[in-house]
Structures are given as structure tokens and as C-alpha cells.
Length: 144
Image (cartoon, rainbow, N blue to C red):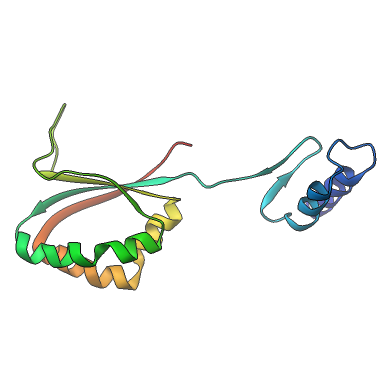
């Protein structure tokens, strides 16, 4: 495969190639491991976003506030964006829902979402959530 990539890079740099630009030569030579190199295009794969959906039933709102007060730094460090949160009970359109409140978060990738969840700082903080609320968390692949 390395030989095929090398040949593709040299083809991109050939005088007759429509991709004979400084950028194409540079990309062809340095991006073997992170890019797809072909005879007609150079394409860098971008990870798909990931969504973490949480269901919550807060038993001790005052103690839960300590979790909320310290939540954002570790969340944002992993590229997290808070998209939606219910201040009251989640409105069910169809079927059943396990908990009264819902939160929807977006991360740049599943890898980032899992890194946030497994971050030692967040794991310590999550102990407060576990003591003050019942929760379900899932991670879902996003669509470009």
C-alpha cells in the first residue's frame, strides 16, 4: 500500500497532472497517513460529530448545583457543546421516556465524547451527579 501511495503522490506531481501545484505536492508528500490520495483528488477525512443524550431525574437539586457549577470546563476542553436541556419535564411525543429531564450535547467525534466521559476530572465530578441524580447517558454517531 505504501508503494501505491508513493506512486500516487508522484503522479500528482507529474507535469501532466492537473494537481501539479505546490499545495498538491506538499499534501501528497506529507499526508500519507491522514489523507486519501488518488489520481483525481486529495481528500482529508473529517470525523463525524457525536451526540451524547442524557436522561436525568434529579433527587437533590441543591447538591446537584455543585455538579453544574463545575461541569463546563472539562466539557468544553473536549469540544463539547450544549445543544438542549429541559428545565422541566421532557415532553413525550410517542412511547415512554425513562427520566423526566433530558440533555443533548454535541462533540466533534465519538472519540472526543468518550474522552470527556473518561476524563479523570469529569469522573471525579460525576460522583456528585451519581449521588444527586439518576441518569442514563448514550453516545450516538452524528450525520455530516
